[in-house]
Image (cartoon, rainbow, N blue to C red; front, side, top):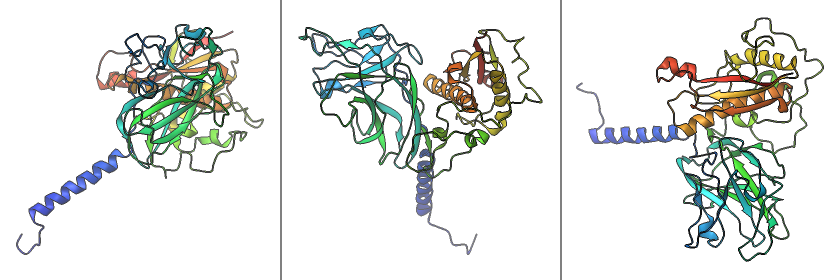
Amino acid sequence: MYGVKTLPLRKLILLIIIFGLNQQDAWSQLTDVVLRNPSFEGSPTQGIISDFGIHTRLPEGWRDCGIYKFPDETPPDIHPDNLWGNTLEPNHGRTYLGMVVRVNETWESVSQRLNELLRKDVCYDFSVDLARSDNYWSKLDQEDLYESNFKTPTVLRIWGGTAFCDKEQLLAESKAINHDSWKTYDFTIKPKTNFRYITLEAFYKTPTLEPYNGHVLVDNITIFRAYQCTEEPPILAEVTQKQEKKVTPKPKKKTPPHKQRSVKKPEVVAENDIIEEPRKKVMTELARDKIKVGKPIKIKNLYFKADSSAIETDSYDVLNEIFYFLRTNEDITVEIGGHTNTKPPKEYCDSLSTARAKEVATYLIRKGIEKERIVYRGYGKDRPLINSKSSMANRRNQRVEIKILSMG
């Protein structure tokens, strides 16, 4: 060791600490963000204020912002229970959220503290289910003699902030929601600074000459999936190449992986796209003389990237096999159901299983199967095949199934 020049111990320790912090920061930049209670599970109730000024409790994990900005106005509603004449069933779970805008220039919003930071200059993809009811009858205040129908199309705004209900950056905004059935909207966001809080806000369609009575229904927000904004998206084999280009033009930018997987208008199979029966079948159970309505069948040889809904290319053979079966049995409707193992938290399992089921449904729809014939649902870890935490049980429980809903 003599003659070798070494760093003083104090400097060496300092360098190790700095290197470790830099590495930790670099690793944390691409951490997915999972919301608490992303499908607003709670007890159906009208948003009311008691005689003591207490607002109705919102679903766990969410805080009412109106109590700070508009303390005399009621908080959001938790559906369904035929509230205000709205009869729309949830798209995920048991309940969902309804938020209104009012003619008196007040509106509803909710907020929560995130488990992880939304980090500066990191891109995130997520989706949310939105709808509007043709009936949403309510009085503007207790002194009103008549009810008004709060049915004017309303937008959903998503804000990032550094405290509850803080609106530092408008991260995303939907179009005015005017459809009376659930539709999934995909968003890509890029925070300009680190945010620990997120706020969902109902707001007027702009520009508008004057405020109005309207509402938006919100359900099933997925995981905020992080990725480097400079990443090139993977190509979805021949599906992307045959995608019809009758889409609303968007600014030219690199499309992130999750955005490519959004459900678009079903593609019509091209005339030169020959539908051939697979030479070697993997899903031998998927035959008309073997299937039964209501009985799920595990999709074999279906692979996803770890902790992701991105489908591995080795899975296309079995997905094309399912496509051929549905294409040649046009009277059959199916459910694609996602399941996880029992180790992660429930919210994470629900979001991941839904995203994976949606990914399979999207592939089949893009290939040409009518979207009315396919529904998807994430069951999370609620329906394990084996009640065990062994590695074998985890592999068996983590699956995607196809279930026949109707035929003939």
